[in-house]
Amino acid sequence: MALAGDVAAGIAYLSSIVGLALFVFAANTWRRVRDPRLWFLAGAFGVFALKSFTVGYSLANATLAHETLEVVDVTGDLLTVGLLAIPIVWKPS
Image (cartoon, rainbow, N blue to C red):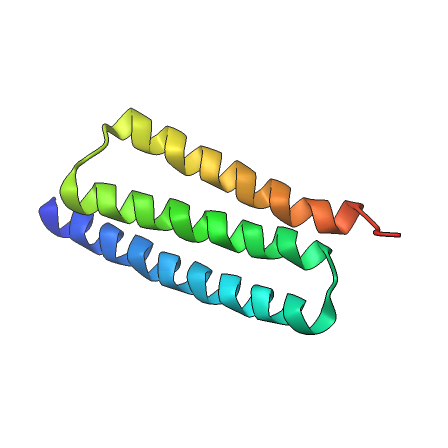
């Protein structure tokens, strides 16, 4: 069972690195394009990276109870999806 936790933590850490890379990519794209919707995209990737790191750290070190970890995971997912939906709906003037 410990091996499964280590694998899950490793996957969560990998997801965090991918999310951080996408955050940097979106922020750099904003510098060139200056479209304000890109900040929501960068924010979504930042929230995803932070959530993934928190989940990975908690799985590796057992710092959060399972129920709390589920709440953190679902809240992070909802924030990510919300931040991804804003640029689709919002048309800047």
